[in-house]
Structure formats: structure tokens, C-alpha cells
Image (tube, rainbow, N blue to C red; front, side, top):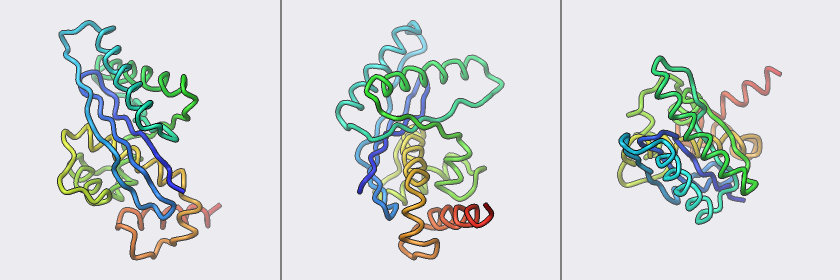
Length: 192
């Protein structure tokens, strides 16, 4: 069974969107990726409408099983946090209207899942998501790569129990990040 996840890296100026299909053995394949952009000169309602219409189009076209959205985290720049939160709300509401489950993941969760370290930089995430998805070139801009990383993170977490049981943390077909994730999950289960 394949899980289709639409990942969203929310933002008012650039909103990254990526769709991946992930098999039970954690093999992930990119279906589509893009960035919805709006101009800071536009009124807020128009910017949110552009994002809402794009998300509606992607949800209707790709019919994901689940939506993975970056969880808003505290920053010093309140206006940036507000914009991200507003864009996230539009995206989450679009999924809710269709009955599509929504999962929220922090940036450090995504970095840990894809690179093995929650403190990795954007370049490392881009490099490893390119490798995980077997892409010829890195997705650009970074918002696009982050959306794909969100989708992969959610799929690996959602299907982790069956995938780890069937492949095991030592399976050589897993990437180093997948092996690290599987080993961490197995260790957490043993500690319970």
C-alpha cells in the first residue's frame, strides 16, 4: 500500500507544496512540487486567497491521503509568525473541508527524520531529500524542498511500525537517515 502525502511549508510570500508517494518499505517518490508566491504589496486577504486557491487545486488534483504542515514555532519576528500561522490556517481549513487528516510537524522533527539531526541546516535537508527521492537536481527554492521533507517525514512516522517491522533498521536498502530513524524508533519501543 502506498501513502500519498501532500506536504506544505506555509508562508505568505512563498508557500512550498510537495506531494510524495511512500511505499510500506519507506521508498519515497516525488509526485509534484511547487511554490505558491504572493507579493507583500498585495492586501492580506488577496494573498491568503491566492494560497487557498492553489491548495484547493493541489488537493483536488493529487487527492492526498493526508496533509503534513510545518508547525508554527515561536520566532522573534512576530509578523513572520503571524503570516505563517495565517497561511497554515488556510491550508488546514482546505484539508478539513475535504475530510483529509492533517498532521503538524516541527522543523526539528523534519530535520531529524530526513538528515538524522534536528539541528541540520536547510542545505543538508535539500541535499538529503534530493537523495531520498532520487531526484536529478535539488528542488528549489528551499521552501519546495522543505515541503517534500515534511511529506516524507509524515509518511515515515505514520507508517513506521509496519515499515520498521518489515524492513528492520539494518536493511541496506534504507538511506542512512532512514536507518537512523528506524533505529531510534526501535530503541524508543524497547524503552517503553
